[in-house]
Length: 429
Image (cartoon, rainbow, N blue to C red; front, side, top):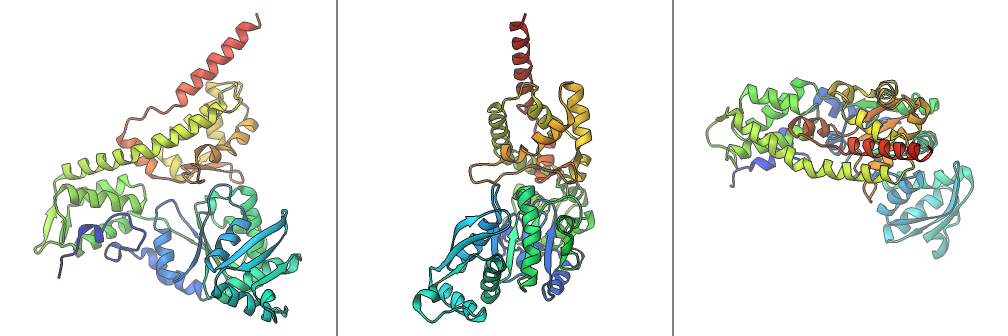
């Protein structure tokens, strides 16, 4: 029998790596309990903290939709039904309802439509009505979709809801109440600041949704290292463990990468026959620099997208660049807790007195669109208008800037804005 490879124990993986998996705070059993109840579930936590692994462990055969910037609730239902072999075509939509048509694309979709039609008392006696169903009345729109999802026996999981706009998150909160009324229970996953965000958006969700928060404590992160090391018959020195735990900023995914790279630097590829200790701190230092170097392309692309977006805006005060400089340069504690608008305004207004707080709030609501790629992915920070805070969505940024000296483009953009302003003022005299 072949020996277990180190990458089967540590590292980033779409599948759960059981040897280094830690059931933090007995969340596995807590989530399993909640899944057996008649309520929605919200899983909240920072990026790469293990939300997806937790969901995979608890929710088998899920109907998963991953949100992207610009997604609407209609996109969520369209993607979910597509996974069931059903096509949703929207004919008319507004803030409160939509009208459209569903068509089966495979046999299972046809069966689901037929079963739900029968349960709702709709005619399904012909081939046409079995394969298609018209819905346009507000009271039956979500009822039919909810029926299809429930009849499939799969739990709808909506991931990365922080990519939805504030308006769409509010719509979702009201539609979750409607889905609950129809007995269709949903799991939503994402990054948000204040607890029970969806209940704040719609108080009718109180008692109908349970929130589970994932936040790693140092001892929990240490268990990941110790459990995985034991599976490989390795012992990683305490000093190295401490460095990894500090550097990962509560990001379990980053911790997994750093440990795997450290073991690679020690030239270990498989489980050891006798326990072997890794104590040379230079292995970790080299590993950390290598991981930071791998992240360089990610954040350089992020900076290029933001800078390119800023240059397309009419921005005489340089407010976008001033805001990004204040956000990205904020200390680690503020990134971990959320950066308040007042703190950003204090810095930006001091550098450029013409910047007004209300204008700052307006442009902060647009920073998501500056960051994402053509597929609507790649958020690093996001503005939560209800809390008047900028949240860090990607804690790897904190690790990256610790190990790499970065020349962000914000100062250059600020200088360009000031030069343009001076040029305009000179032309007036």
